[in-house]
Structure formats: C-alpha cells, structure tokens
Length: 162
Image (cartoon, rainbow, N blue to C red; front, side, top):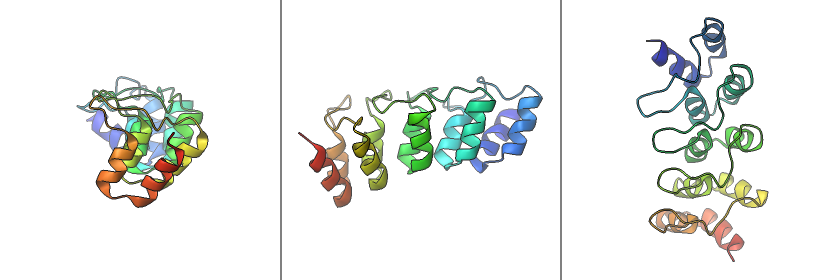
C-alpha cells in the first residue's frame, strides 16, 4: 500500500505526500514497483521536475538508479519526452548520456525511437550524445528515426553523423 501511494505521488507530482512519507521514514531507496522502477523513475516519466528534485536532493534517493531493464530515470524521461527532467537528470541527477539500458540503448536511442525531436536536438547540441552508439542488435539512433518516419529527428541525426 505504501509503495503504490508513493509511486502515485511521484507520478502526480504530489510533493506534500512525499514529504510526509519521508518524515515517517517510509520513503527510501527500497521503494520500487514490480519492474524495479523507483519513485525517481516515475517522476521523470511523468515530467514532474519539482517532485524529481525533491526525491533526489532532499529525500536522498539516487537519481541514477536502474530499473530491472537497466533503464535510468534519464532513459524514462527521454522515452516520454520530458526534456526538463532529462536536462536536470543529466546535469545534476547523476545520469550520463552514454548510460545504456539492458538492450544497449542510450537516451538518444530512446528520444529517436519515440520521435521526441526536441530532446534529440538538445542531446546533439550538448555535444555529449554519440550518434554512432549501437544497441545490442546493432541499431543506431538514426535507424529508429527512419523507422518511425520522423523526418525532423532524422535530419538532426544525419546532420551530426560522421
């Protein structure tokens, strides 16, 4: 019951509930869903930056924890199109653009796969994203953009490819 309430509060950005849980010492790094995703993952997926910052900066949860599939909260933010959360996780939350999930995907792969060209653009402009990084099956970010027919992302990726 506490786990479900905590994850719901993280998804909804309910910082007050999380503060109460933190004060009661029930909000900790052991709180995870069945797939190993933490409240930080849930806040990142939902785009709840204030909540995300509280969880990491005040509650002390790791910003770079991994779910069972190897995804960090930054992977989740990139996949769901939450640029502000992704930026914070990469600059202050302990995540890196080169981090890979269990299939070898980086945040750039996920931004490309889900057609989030504003995230693709920001990652490429940061200079830290590797357009040549391949997944375990050999897929490049440009492959995902092409498969989706995402011309804006495809143009961005081709413009940054060697």
